[in-house]
Image (cartoon, rainbow, N blue to C red; front, side):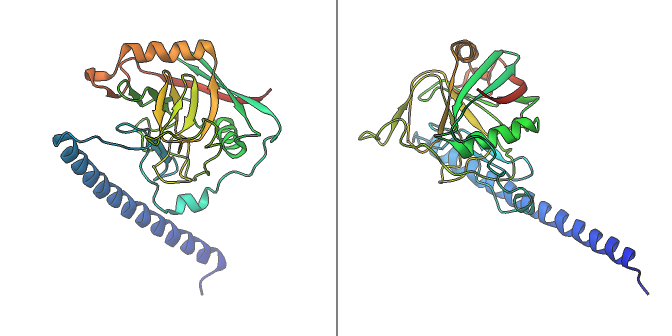
Length: 266
């Protein structure tokens, strides 16, 4: 006879094995996808074509992925996984009539981001939820662009551009910067903070980008905050140091680590 305790342990072991199998299969799929993407980009670059990506946030593991690539900020698209089902978007607990500050203590200087929950309640709520869990503490800003678009991208605890929280949030406030021009873009003014995404609607996660110089992008990235003057100066100094290897897009030469992130109601 198998006792109820033994049966529970057996079921737990079986569940663990299934989880490991799913994670391994996802890892293999992600590797194949990244190989294909890299090959496509190499062909496009070799032919002199323009590469367009979107700043995206998503998650393949518990810590999703958001990263900007090419002439837009992007992150790899999240794949359905058990982790995502275990990590639903956090329950809305912020005051939808209030303003909040997200304070980023970094080795490059303190950055304070003003956020309005009446305009982007679910985005603000997600950042408060993650900051309260110390999700961003110790993470690196993994991407700096100094050509065509001018952003510093952060929010991936893995520091690779492939991390995210395991859930996605909807786009908000997309008309805040006005109507798109004939080129399909709007101006994201210096000091704007917006969500990265996979280039598809509703794929925001934890990655975000700080605009340090007026930048034209499609109005598909949730603008949710404004950097204070001191913080903007700090980001501009990081940008002035350039990208590693002298490229126009890549890891910042002056490494930026978010030592601590807090979100407080004003």
